Length: 84
Length: 211
Image 1 (cartoon, rainbow over the protein chains, first blue to last red):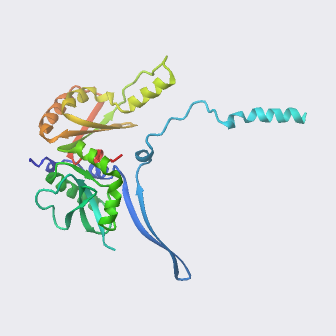
Image 2: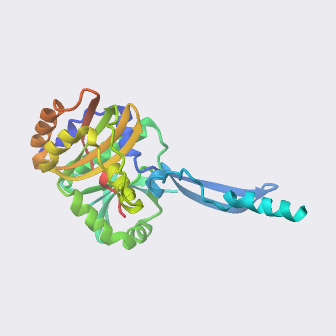
Image 3: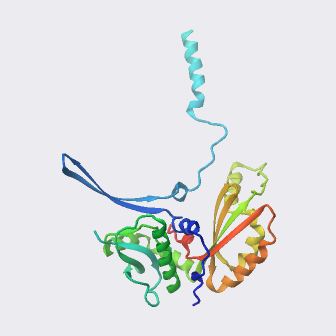
């Protein structure tokens, strides 16, 4: 088989972009203690990557918000009527 | 603590030696290229080194699924328990990338104006939007020209001019020469407001996602 993969002309930026496209796994150790006494040991393993690689592309916001917050003025209006 | 640094899942034991420190372990019915050691820091040198290793593996194996950079496990049993639940998906992904390399096309320029889908219901509009996100109409002549040589495509629209999109093509190794020729020929057909930057061949980084 011919070694096509040898003749790459990618820059460092290209390489970083391709290698880290799925994100990066960061590991670490954390020790919690009080007065020099170690109490809790945590071994962390986290994935750092663009949110859209995990959650998918963000949905566009609706132009007209139909949230409960939009009805507040009506409630306020009724309360004002009661006060009167 | 010494762990196993994970480089790639491969379909079978590689031809020849992969290099100092690298070994192949069997886990969940597949082969995994590993190195004894601790997780690497994210530096330019370590990313380059990782890419060199994955390239070496890709030259020695037909099907390669690179791991996420920095992936480590404590031992072989941890690796097996990581892969066992996704063994079927790994097999499907290996079948997809077998004998293929990746070409990446960055698309720069001015985005093409797409007519809004008026007079249609919300469902159709939603599906139209989903379809538009998977298409790069700006490079339609290139897409049509290379289509016979592309086994799979992944599109990522950026829409942050001048960078419009990244298009990843999975190309069979035996079609690579024809793919390049078609790519070079069709570039001349692009609109003047659009420019593409193809790079490759790469190991199939963009196709190494296991659902």
